[in-house]
Structures are given as structure tokens and as C-alpha cells.
Length: 193
Image (cartoon, rainbow, N blue to C red):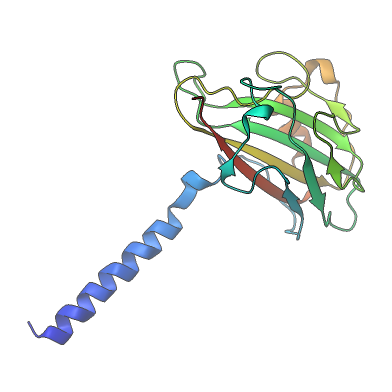
């Protein structure tokens, strides 16, 4: 085998490996859901206390004050009538939750002109029930190792007629179906020391 053929073969293997790594990077994204998005948008969601894929400060967890971090959002698509915010953890041991997901925060019917959620404050809207059975934000509290926490913001072309006392994430996602104009996502990590 000539040196040129060998080098070309190695190059193909390296490029193929990179394509595989990029294409299979689902562990960096939130778990797939059955939600259909009608159109994409330039919506943005961020925080001044951690960056995407960064560490969530302990203040916002069960080891600290257990209050929500400040969030900033922008560029809701034209025609949005409400926003939905879901925070969940897809890294829960199956021995604790068979589906491996813990829902930390559910809020819907947030006014579409909302641009920030201050630290420790619930946004205007309806607050649903988290996996722990309470209402409102419950911070990261991983029992075993570092977990990922996904803050997912959706813009809807409607408001939702859902009762907070009976609504869990499955009900919320079912009601959102067919109404999503765009979404943005922020992921933070936390591990108890």
C-alpha cells in the first residue's frame, strides 16, 4: 500500500469518526419528546449566573437557597400568544424514576413579551406540579453524580386552558402539541460535593 493511499484512508476514518461524533451527540441535548415545532425561530434563553453547559451555582440548588436562577429570554417569534418554561433532569437513576426524568419546574401562559425571570421569582403565568408533587421551582439535587438540567422555553400560538392542580409535564406537553412556534434551551450541570 502506498503512503498516499494510507494517508487518504486515515483521513477518511478521521472524518467519518467526526461525523459520527457530531451526529450522535444526543447526550448533550435534552431527551427527545414528541412535541412538534411548526417553525424554528431565533428565540434565546440564557442566564447571567451560568452559561450553556456550565455549572449551576450551588445557591440555586438543594445545597443552597433552592431558588430559581435569573433567566433572560428574547426574540419570541411573531404571533406568539404565550410562553412555556419547563426545567427537567434526564439523568435520574432508573431505580428512582423508571423514565429517568425529574421535572423541576413547569410554568405556562407566561406573557410573550416577558424578557426576564428574576432570581427567586416565579414569572407571571400558571405554575404546575413538579415531580416532587409541589408547585414552583425545585433546584438540582442529584443523588448520585453530576446531572444535566435543561431549561426549555417554548413560544406558543395560543394560551393554554389547564388547571395547575392537576397538570404535570405530560398534560402540559399534550396541550402544547401543534401550537409551538419556536423554542430555546439552556442546559446547566450540577454535582453535589
